[in-house]
Image (cartoon, rainbow over all chains, first blue to last red; front, side, top):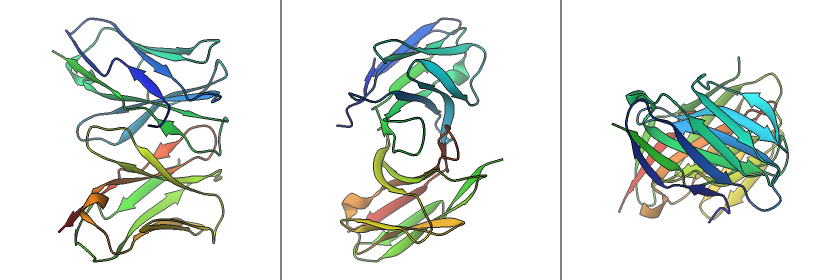
Length: 113
Length: 108
C-alpha cells in the first residue's frame, strides 16, 4: 500500500457528462501529480500541484481541470466527456516539488460509454 | 524537449536468465531518475531513485545504475513474479516524465 488513496476505483459514465476524481496524498506529502494512462499509451502527465498551487502543466485538455485543497487532497474534474477519455487516471504524491520519489495510488478506471 | 526512451519494448526471459533493461534520456537538467514497476491495472510501484552518474541501487534481484545519458535496470536470476512492466522516469524540474516501459515476462 503506497498510502495514496484514489476514489472511486471504477467509474462508468455517458458521453457529455462530468465527473470528479479524488486523491488523498500520503501523510505529509505536499505535491500531487495527475496522470492519464490509456490502453496503448504510457503515463501521460496532466498536472502537478504543490501545497495548493499549480506547479506544472502537461497535456491536459481544456475540458479537464484540477485543484488541491488546503487539506492537500486533490480533485481532477473531467467535463464534456468523450469516448476517448476512457482511461486509467492515476494520482501520485511526493514530499517535495521535485527530486524526490512519487508514490502512486491504484488509479480510477474511467469508462465513457 | 525532454525525452525518455526505453528498450527493448518487451523482453521474454526464462526463469534464472539474467538480463538488462535500458533507459536513455535527454533532459536539460536532471533532478532525479526513477524506476517503477507496474502490474496490469495497478498503479506504478516505486523501486529506485538515482541522482548522479555512477550511482547504483539494489533491491533483491534488481539493480539500477546511472550514467550521464542512460540508466540500466539489471534483473539477476529472475523469477516469474518479476513479470511486470518496468518504467523509467526523469524529473528535470517539477514534471515527472515517463518512458513507454519495458514489459518483462519470465517463464518458469
